[in-house]
Image (tube, rainbow, N blue to C red; front, side, top):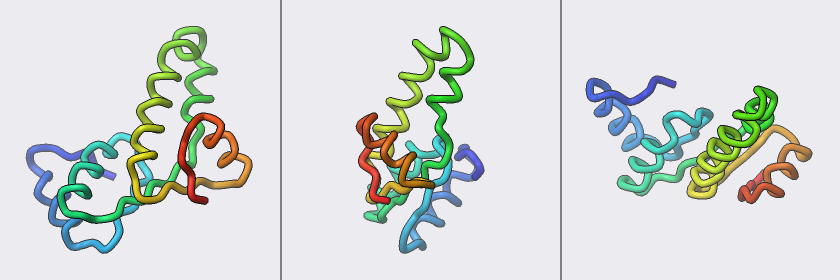
Length: 105
């Protein structure tokens, strides 16, 4: 997934306009996709497959107490704003639900 820039933002907009459903596997472009999907009234489905919070917690105190909660909060907020959120396994779904995510499957 390429990050939206001033040069390719129209490509993102047109691709979403022409789609029936938009599926987002990447957190970095989520704010743009949420905005465009809302403007164009298109459903956005999010796939969460990496436990980013756990990875950040392993980087030490800064990651555990500062980065992990911020990043997890950002991803949770975005995921809860999508039409559907899916993950890779029932056990990871349970982890996300305990953290306040709305996970459909």
